[in-house]
Amino acid sequence: MQITIRVAGHSDLKKLVKLHCDSFKADEHIPVLFGTNYIKANYQWLLNSNHSYVLIAENEDEIAGLIAVSDIAFTRPMFIACLPQMLLGFLLKPWLIFNKNLWKRLTRKSEENEQVASILKTKEFAQMTIGAVSANYRGHGVFGSLVDATRSYSQARGSKAIRAGVYKNNPSSRKVFIKENWQEFKQLETKDTVFYVTCFDEYFADKFGLQWTDVNYSKRLK
Ligand SMILES: CC(C)(COP(=O)(O)OP(=O)(O)OC[C@H]1O[C@@H](n2cnc3c(N)ncnc32)[C@H](O)[C@@H]1OP(=O)(O)O)[C@@H](O)C(=O)NCCC(=O)NCCS
Image (cartoon, rainbow, N blue to C red):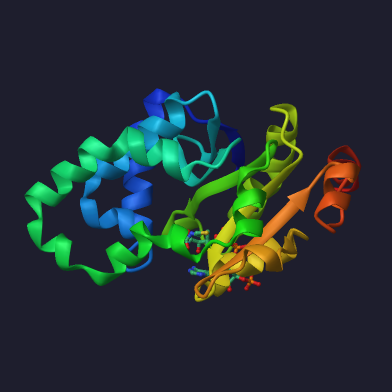
């Protein structure tokens, strides 16, 4: 298996959507409830926006894994861009209106206090939006390689840290961030989600009481 990592382009859209839909059940990732076209709209935003990028791990022509990162808080701009597809999803599946988990997710902002809101608005604090590895490639460290690659890509784009929210009941994903030495960031923790952070700027790290990683130094060690 010869895995290479590269930035995804528009020609990868179909494969990205397929990998996403194959990787998540609706109870693990609420947007899947709205169907393939809504997921496609999410990836179109990620590929089109000047504020985000998608990396793929590739084995020959096959996409083994993906990871997406937004340079800014992504929830609102992505939500607005994908709203027409969401409304269409409601029209096609009107019973979604009664889905409690969906409303919990859509109103998640109410869990934020002032301190959290100010952290989320901090400039240069990138946010991982999604990650997945194809079932055929799991257990080979593919996600770790993608997670690691985001540090140098985001640093080159001007970010000083990245945060990643992971559901507490997703031990496979949590293990990867721990193995990659990302730190748990208690201030952002919610009932269901734990946040891992990697910080590559000393002053930025100090501001939030985090440790910092010299990206170039950690690359040399590998
Ligand atoms: C979570 C996920 C991205 C991990 O990717 P990966 O490349 O398999 O990661 P790793 O190879 O480092 O394995 C991580 C852990 O997954 C578990 N694992 C190993 N093989 C596995 C398999 N075939 N299927 C599921 N989990 C497996 C193990 O606990 C492993 O930890 P270990 O290496 O200490 O035993 C992948 O399982 C996945 O895509 N899951 C569905 C989508 C998802 O949860 N995305 C993350 C959202 S934040």
